[in-house]
Length: 570
Image (cartoon, rainbow, N blue to C red; front, side, top):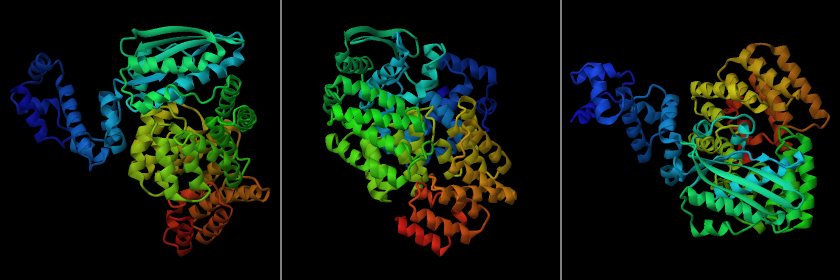
């Protein structure tokens, strides 16, 4: 009877975020202390906990019904802000509200809390520390197997990398990552012998669930990886479809030497440097020579070429890089049409090379099915390009679920395009406390620019430039826009001249696009449109952002702008 009375009173004041424990106690004729004692006896909860969890249950019901955004649900169930609702919801259920709303992942939500795992970096016990690439590769292979199981949530490698050094307790790591289990271990490799020790640990109790040591020949590493993944899946009681079962018996290559070179190649690629991309290209070319049927090697080689046109490469133009990558993407798909990396790159090619928006989305949808973080990030960008910002927010939350510390999180970007600036600021400030890298500073500067906090934005753009001592065109374009809006016109024009000089030297990096960004911020529309035409003619990598770049909003009514957008296929 008491619980029903309490629920009725909360229902009557559901949208009132100021409805307190005192108010609830008064409504049913009790003191706060009386209410606390009775509730604690009946449910083991405090009154404030009872109110919050009842509201969260109602929020879950509304999300499952569909039709409302997470922010709308937050206010309907009495939370003063969407970010606080998201925080409480995630702490209680183990996954953010956007995951429930997203119809593509509703089937997964019931299992996300108890069937989730993070694979911590294995210790390299080999005498030669240059074998670090091998231990990382073994982890990636196990993760690839497990990520293909739809009923299991596997945290991405980028998010567990921060636990490589340090000695945090397992329960603390599991709590931070929102998982129920951790796989940890060590690898020792000596010539053609390998020893792998693994331990599956309960994330809540820190108890040992399962452990095993493998002493095998190096050539048996494929079977070891599959066996470990299968045993982990069984221990977590993950349900495998017949198709998923068949993937455990499949290996990417039967050639140990090709596999070893492949692991070295992806290790180099993931340094995310120009040198790393070149080293990866050299190594992966050798891999394909040894095993021309190695689909994943073809996909990663294509990705390495494309890396030379990215923000950290800026050596090739988008068109040059994509043309080099396309035959490799085609080959990878012909060898394995379901390979997520290959479908992700096909979507990337169709979008950036062909400006084929529908074709890109079809390819991206094939890639995101496994939760591949890079594929999710690219699909989120696509959704923003075509102004489907609310969908992008839901997918950004999913990316954050699978990869909480993804280095280029799309959460801030998605908050900005949905007009949720305070939530963006809260998230971005928390991220800055954890990560001091170019991407974090870049997105924080972008946020401040679009909150019209121009002086602060300039400070962060300078921090990002000083961090790597590289004057990336995107960073300069946004900083020039901040100068323009602040009235520092001389500084804005200095950046324009720098970008023009670099373009004259045939440097890469969407220079014309960002010259247009600054001219548009200066409200020199004719000049901005002129440089956008140059960016169109040179097929600048950033052109798909045409409709979504906030600095171009003042151009949306211009006939020349609309014509350019139509030519691109918007």
